[in-house]
Length: 238
Image: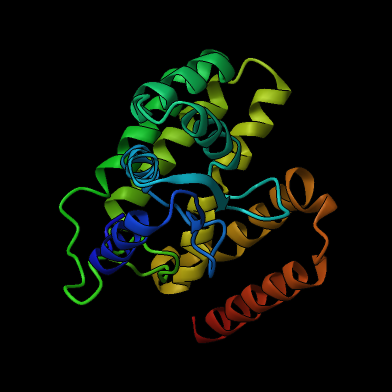
């Protein structure tokens, strides 16, 4: 864990307690769809826990929706690490990608590497030891650069074009949602004239492959309504 205080407290508990249970977080709980380059921390965290008498971990990741940021891969990697904390996270990621993505696996591996690169050399908050990839960060976080968004868009365009089946194409569309989400949350100033079309694409994809069984669909409807209002304001100004 990056937090020095959290680490030190757990070390203290491990000296007086043989069985510790941990409730951890590994998602942006303000923006479940946001790109989140934190999977590289899973291995060190699990090894740290195993070395300090942690016998169980409840990892609160992406609740209740199937389209959370790399949700399936997160669950698979964590399940492997829960049993074997010494496994290499990068190797697990590639194992998952090459085992599930078919002919678009090279492109999905390229996107994963691009996302990992955004976590490098991030500034830390000296009071907490945490960087931009904590539990909550806004969609204008410094690592969400235009260059990153543009390159991710290029990769997903290529992946959709290369998909060998409708099933793979839908999965690529779902994996692209975090990038669409960033664009929409950044607003018309970031996207330009394509903002309205991006809203339509986001809503169509989300309703088709993610939110058809979302238990709080009203919240999604409110989000779409808010985005559409932003587009109307932008169009009036333009």
